[in-house]
Length: 120
Image (cartoon, rainbow, N blue to C red; front, side, top):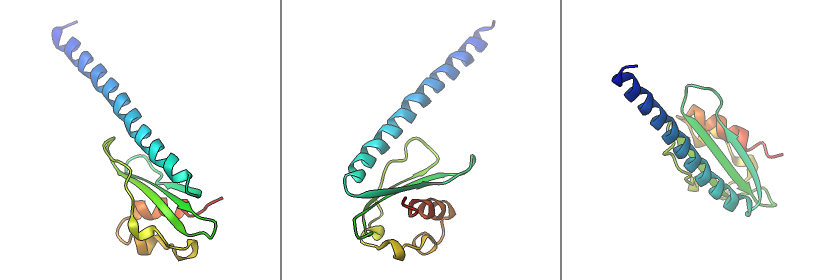
């Protein structure tokens, strides 16, 4: 094997390990935010489907009267996306949530929100 091949294999292994570590870090941050959210009420969670598009994950916490008390949103292509809140969702009643109105230009977020409001 040539030296260039060894370097390429080493770089591939380093990239793979780095991706695993950063993926774990992202999931850990989401899980921490989700645990705080789940203490506030019933939680609905939705995400986009598909392989080659930006992912969106939305979690909504509803109180006993079906009002949104808190939410978290993660969107993006990379492991560097972090949980954020959308203040406009807080205080909305379950029946008032319209994904097309809240995210008029973002089909991925509409898809995730539509799934999240289907609380079981």
